[in-house]
Length: 227
Ligand code: CTP
Ligand code: CA
Image: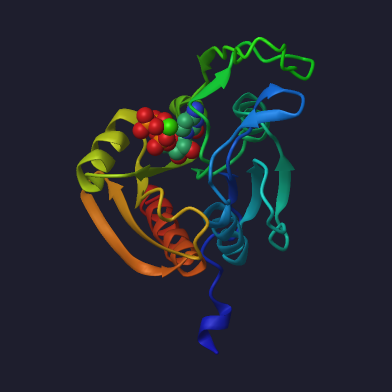
């Protein structure tokens, strides 16, 4: 009975989340994407909403339903994701970058469908580096201390070492690591939280359970900051 009078963990907080893959066009009918299903990001959106937050989810192409009560903005490319995030970021308390953002886009995308020309030559794609969305948001944090930034990293090896280094390099207070790409599309995951005092393992569980644990870890850190 007592518990029901306790405010929810993220009551009154606004949380912005990116999820899913990005899609970088080659021409109007083809593109480059990755195997991110969006499941982890959508689970975090759901968990944050359940914890009482007002949640905005900027999503690349996925086959997932929008979690109940969550505002969802659909995008395709990394640059569209950056635009949507920067438009929504004002007034947010927390940013969680879960999206598997393409590091490069096709710089010479064609506005017409590329045709075989009969010569047997393949088209030559050129790539340009995409903007770093998490870094752009982290840069706005230096203005007034918000939002609290959480990054994700999928590493194929040396997770503990690479995770700690990536958190420092990104200049963010919390980074969530998982061993990728095995986790892509799965319903379960295991994650490692990296912060200024070291790392903590959250053992294998469903993505929703891990999302709920992560939300409470984020809430704990927000609480600590406001003391
Ligand atoms: N990220 C982003 N924008 C990008 C690339 C990555 O916002 N253009 C975010 C991801 O959403 C994730 C974090 O940065 O939260 C780490 O992504 P990751 O791909 O692991 O890091 P990179 O800096 O791209 O390094 P790597 O060379 O290992 O891919
Ligand atoms: Ca990357």
